Length: 390
Image 1 (cartoon, rainbow, N blue to C red):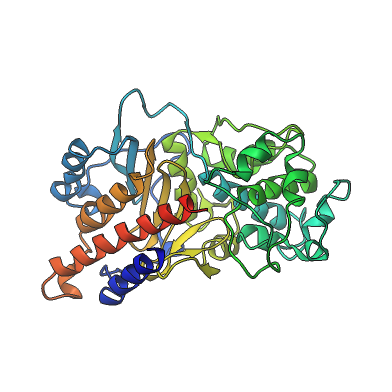
Image 2 (spheres, rainbow, N blue to C red):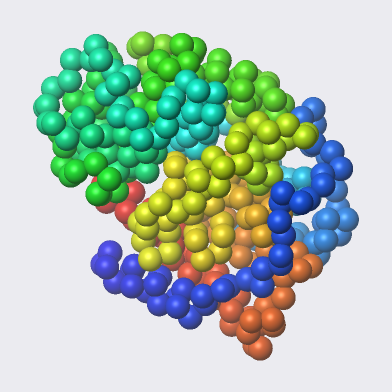
């Protein structure tokens, strides 16, 4: 079943190798007329080069969709062109973003390296845990580097999203870092992709140890504060280390600020908040986890479309589409939200951009759009299936 589904997705992308007519946008040369540090500005879609009649089809779709959305935001050229909230949710209510947290933690590693607290991603992680009582000892644990944690290739055994769930077992342990480091090795470091929220928590612990600051404090000073993220909820483990892999809480508009920072290559109001080299490195595909999906430094990628995203359980998403100067944010309570959002992006958001022209690559236009939409949905189904099969 799994192999057939992957083959089907691969076939679809062979049929549509370049799904969108991509304009030539270089973000380093874009001059912004304002920065949403204090507040986001709203705009009509037309003022930002979008067709509102197409974009607003999103509303009709959501009204007839059974998926449980909590919020949906579309930002183009730095302006909110679409924003909707559902049930009791609103723009000022923080939302748990689950594994989107990982992309934030990864960014803090980049900042710690840039500020000299960490030498490089090639440092062995055990340098930061000399006092841990590590069981299931294996000499290969000496070879695990920070980069292996960033790319989910540490080689540590980890089960997540199944009945025997290591993430929850870690949460009930007295020392989360020690629990993760004590897992058996099932592969050499750098060889096998194994989704591991515990490894992401080790990254937070490394930030904590190297900077001698609480991870959240380091983030407030160097990341959140400079871009206008004032208040977050970020729980800690028994040692007081913020959960590096999940459960960060922030508003959808703050999620959009984080995505917009990356869309602008780490710059914000003429200040380089995150090094451009780190943004490029962190969002560049390091390994393929399916025929269409890659993984970078705690970011998911779709290389054929130049799209990358932070993804969290039950439909928390920050999607960056650099070629159309777009950030799309979604919060939800339904794993199938990713399927619905993929449909919205491929059928309403991108096609509403004036530069989009399906006839440029396909004389029958709609065929390309349909194949692209179906292939994105199939990709998300593969992601959900793989997560549930662990």
